[in-house]
Length: 94
Image (cartoon, rainbow, N blue to C red; front, side):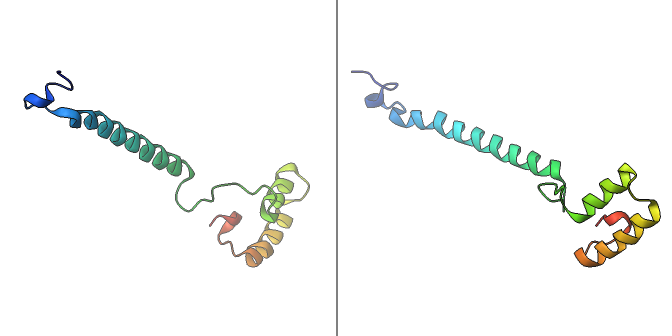
């Protein structure tokens, strides 16, 4: 009986079935690695994964943008929040 490319006559035998499996695993691993790398690259280095819309600095920025407080009030309160939450730089940018 001739099976798997003449196994008894010196052919490759059942091992030939592992090569497509190995290539499928290599391709799946490459795609997974690429997707994870691209997904991390969108966030950028040092940026948090999620945006906290309820943080005090964000609320202060929304109040300033909507006109509830003026620029002097914004900078005064931001300096206090920077000291309390450890953020540095003007505008709270780290």
